[in-house]
Image 1 (cartoon, rainbow, N blue to C red):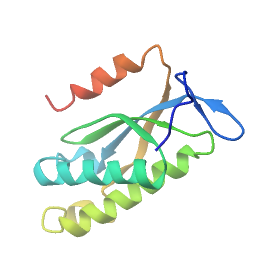
Image 2: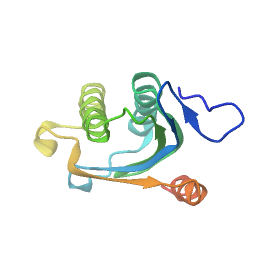
Image 3: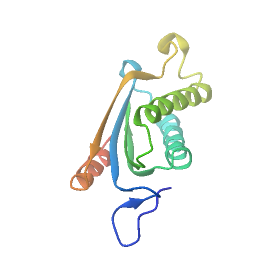
Length: 140
């Protein structure tokens, strides 16, 4: 997990001082409404594990609606966003399809759980609270 530089709102590593925040939205294939109940809970667990333990990111806010997930996160300058997103989609799809094979049948999904596309944008410290509040309202 990232640790803030003492006395500042920024992070630091050996070669840089930074504050990189992103809003990621990933949508299910055909916008199928399957992110509910146990699938939702497991997706949130996997998301926490991947972002925090595998990619050394901080999750600021995360929530789902029935057909998509929003993740507001911070990462290091060394993080390659396209690799992170593609890995996230691959790992979550594989694990969810394996654990919920009865719900996520191949005839509906083919070989995918997520849509081919995704949305990601940078977030500034000025609008972080607005984006976090928006994410918390998802699914309600």
